Structure formats: C-alpha cells, structure tokens
Image (tube, rainbow, N blue to C red; front, side, top):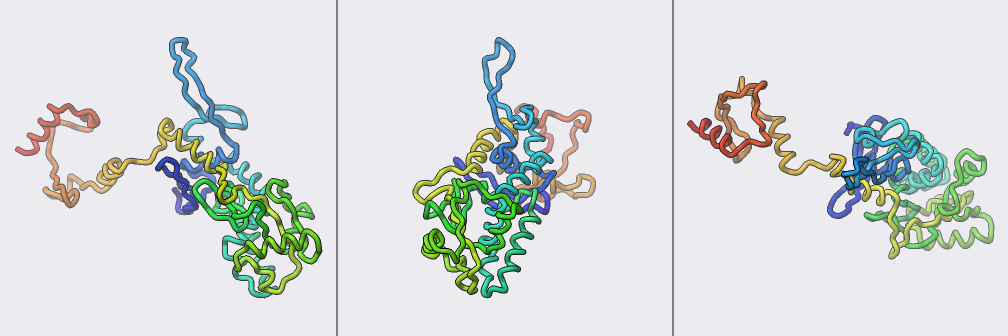
Length: 329
C-alpha cells in the first residue's frame, strides 16, 4: 500500500474482514476488487473444463466491458478502466458526495454566521475535486448506502426515517438546475423545496428540524434563509437494514479470496517473513545470536549450496534429524 493510502472502512463477514482504503491509480488490493464489483466493472461466472472427462466447475472473474477473463494481477489493480468508472459514478452522485463532505467533514458544524456559508461551499467543492477519480471516503460511504444523518453499520448505513431531509444552500440547488451537476434519480432524491415557499417546504422543514442533530441546523444558527430542503430516500431504515452494494461486493470478494491466492497471511507466516527480514548476516554475526526471546541460533556449515538446496518445505524426518544431530555436535 502506498503512503497515500488511508484506512476508510472495514466490513466483516463470517469473521473475515475487508478494509477499504483511499486508493489511486496503480495501487493494488482486495478492497479494489470489491469496489470494482460494487461499481459493476467486473462480474463472476462459473466455468467448466472443456475436457469431457472433467465434470468439475470453477469460477472466473470477467470484465463487464468486453467479457474477457481477468488475471489476478489485473483484478486487484486500480487501472484506467476503474478510474473512468469511478469518475462516472462520482459525477452521477455529485450532490450526494458534496452533501457528505458538507456533513461529515465538519464543514456544516463550523457555520455560525451567514458569511461562513460561501467558504463552506468552497471547501465541499474542493474536496470533491481533490478526490475525483480516486477511491475516497465519500465514494465508499455512498456505495455503502450513506444518506444525510445516517448511522454506519456493517451491512449498510441506515436512517431512522424512510425519507431523511437535508438543508443546503441555494448554490447547490442552482448547480443542479443549471446542469452543472447531475440531478440524482428519484430513488435517491425524492423532492427539493425552497425554504421560503409554503407547501412542501413546511413539511420538509418540520421533518428536518425533528430528526436532525443540532450541528446540522446551520441555517437557523447563522440566520440564513436562502436555502433548499433536499428529501432523500434512505438506502436502509433502522430495523430493516438492507445489504449495501459494497457489502454484497465484499461478500463476493471474500468468498473467492482463497482461489485467487489473495488471502491474508497467517500469524505463523507473518512470523516467518519477519524472521527472514531481520535474520543476521552469517559473515559478520558472531555465534550464538538471539532469534527471539525464546530462541538462540548459530550458523552451522553443511553440504548444501545455493545450487544444491534441500526441499525446505518437504524435509524428511530422517534428514531433519541428521541436520539437527550435525548442528549439536
């Protein structure tokens, strides 16, 4: 993982985890597989051996673009195709992503006066631009079902009400009406109403005031009246949580990790790798030397060379006993 990566979210399924990180082009990881699946970039299908004597069936990952099978390396890599898909997703969900930054980045909580509103808008827009074409916190949250005021859970974000309401500056509404950003479909945003108008606005204002935490009530706090109420459709409701597309993708990815050779190292494998990384230099280290708090080692000359190494993974009991006896002489 590059130094630019940042842990975002963890999903656990049957005691196995996928940790989602901020990612950019060229990085590799199994969380990238799950994001590709959630975005519809890849799919999995059963395959069989063409041999008439082999009735076994396996699975293979394919690209949705050309239906070609994917190697493990291409599957786990953040490539140009994923970047393009991410950009399309972020464009189509821009108002939702801007709303996420507005609420979750501490922006709305910092609005105390009307003069604070425009700088807050700019921070949201700058965050969107900075993470455009990247796997970011906002993108992962949206794929996991985030809506304003929602609560995170392992399976999805969920709201306490079916139609959560957010109050946003006029500027965001004008971005939609002017065609600068895409208006989401009705299964994401159900209604938009101007605060100063009667009718729907009164209903949505009441819903917002009754269900929102105090830090989100920036307009009343700052004396700003030129706002719009956005009524969203919750992806999940408390007591009736539905698996998010990200959860489904994580489940599918975890189920195929073993066959892809992408599983996490076991504790013993980690210890072996660490030991190899810090093992002493036989030319400069004096015998004996400490391996761990419980092991002492020394170098013993044997008949083996780099051109004549034993099968370390399959040493017979007799050979092992012989080597141990030679070392103890």
